[in-house]
Image (cartoon, rainbow, N blue to C red; front, top):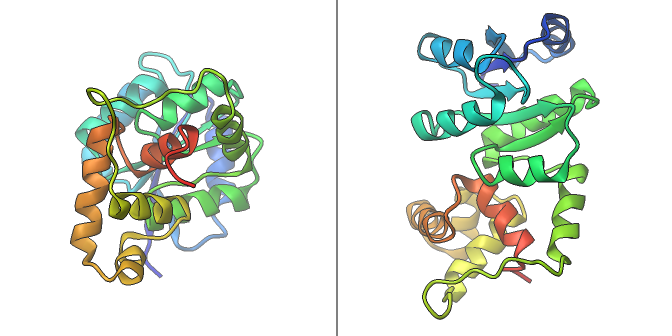
Length: 216
C-alpha cells in the first residue's frame, strides 16, 4: 500500500497533535509537516512534498482560505482538505469552488479523516453527507446560478457523461473503460469543463455540476 504524505496546518498545537496521534493507527498515512499558519505551511511544502494537506481556516499571519488558493495555483498536484469548526454554508461553497478537495468539520472522527485522505488521492475529491446536504439545498435554491457563455452553454453528450460519472465518484481510468475512450481523453474533457465553468479542480467541478443541475 502506497504511503500518503500528509501535512496539517492549524494554530492549535493540541489539536494538531491529537489529529496526528489519532491517525497513527493507519500505516499508509505519514505526517511530514506541521504548521501553525499558512505562511509556515507554504515555507515547508517544497521540502516536505506532502500529497494531502489538512487545512484549518482561521489562522494568524495567513489564513486557510488564502493559503488554499495559493496552493491550488502553485501546487495543483497537492490536495487540500479543509478541517475546521466553521459550519457556515458560504465557507463550504467558497472553498470547494476555489481549490479545496474536501471539507470536514473538526467533529469528524479519525475514520472519516482517513477516508477523506484516501478518497482525495484516488478521486480528487471527497464529499461527505454534510457537504452533500449543502449541495442539495443549493440545487433547489431560487437563486440558482445559470451558466452562460454568450447566449447559451453547450455541453455535448460525451461531456455530460464524463461529468455524470465524475459525480458518481469514478476515476478517470474507470470512466475511460466505461465509455471506451482513453484516460487522456477523459482528462482533456475534464480540463475543458473546468476551464469553461471557471473551477479549480475536480472537486470544484463536481460541486458546481451538482449545485447547478448540469447532470440528471
